[in-house]
Image (tube, rainbow, N blue to C red; front, side, top):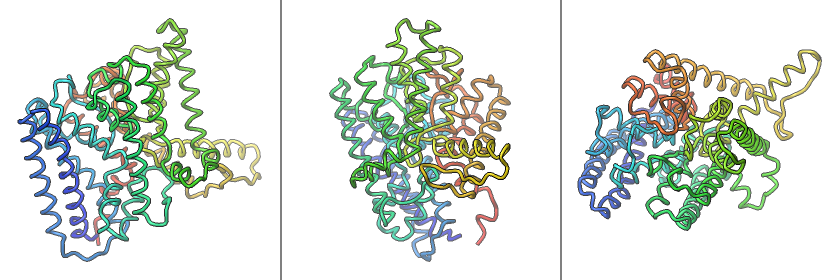
Length: 486
């Protein structure tokens, strides 16, 4: 392990995060929030000093940088980056609570990992500069702060591929362009284009510039932080809901497909089996939940039931976590269906979290093949996705990931239940954070928050957030002693 070079890269990454606080600082100054502005100045200063210290320590290191160093930078980058990002929350007088730095770190990690779970009781009571920072770090985390780092800092050079391949979620790790840095830059250009488009559309729908920017940041990141305690339900606007639904669906799709479209390869859309499964699951879940709400008389009209079902289905499946209704009060079928969608997530290479559609598609096809082989043992057949044969080692890796994900959720549920939480709250608090979704059910439902949880529970759920965002292995290898040996 090249410790010094890892420290050098981490130093640059932390300096980049610290420098990005300038946007929230300017917003605080524009709003006349002098105390909050001072908090950002202190935070920026502390972050830049930490980054400079790490860079100075590793400045004369050898340039050896391989997969092991890439794993260390990505894992430690998110952990340290969230710590620096927590400083404005910690220094903010209005945010300060009995949880202290634990609450600040929870909120920051929830932002960077695009989880959207919050410890804040009344969001409108927070300074606007802090709310802007809270949304902005979700926007940074959506495409990945490490992917941003690769895109804007050419000094990383040939080592960029090790960071990109570790950071980008899902089982599709190929770059869309020959150079990884070019891929990262192109992905961020598409991300910026979506940002401008959604911000303008939300402003046309009646939002203020502040609200439209904040909700654009957190929609595109599938993060779900809102400037309103009642989330998108505050606006009671069909237009706003439709705009957000469209963009949530768009960012739940593999971003490399957009690169294909830009190059005129439109047939890639129709050939992508994951995209088809993603849209199919979303459509069926929306219709079934709407029917459940209608026939249980939760809603008197199919239009209202369909509207709320569509928004919550898309929001939960894409792991955004916005709310327009208190789904804690919905039918048992609707609630269980939403929890099931929490395990699905978006497509590989999207800003969505959880297990990803492609993995579940591979596991489902492998399971069906085994059923066929049970009564036709001599059958020679491979698992195929869109006419492409899936290698046996890929199936094994995907199956192992799914089992590890479910096992982590089950163990986490037992841990949270051991802290005194009821079964529903314990189970959904873990999947809500491990899947980077935001709200769960019970005590952490749509109209609730995570601030009341015991400190050990918040620390554990913070770990779940980064585990989910980095897809388990990247973080778990940190606990293997052999990983750190030379």
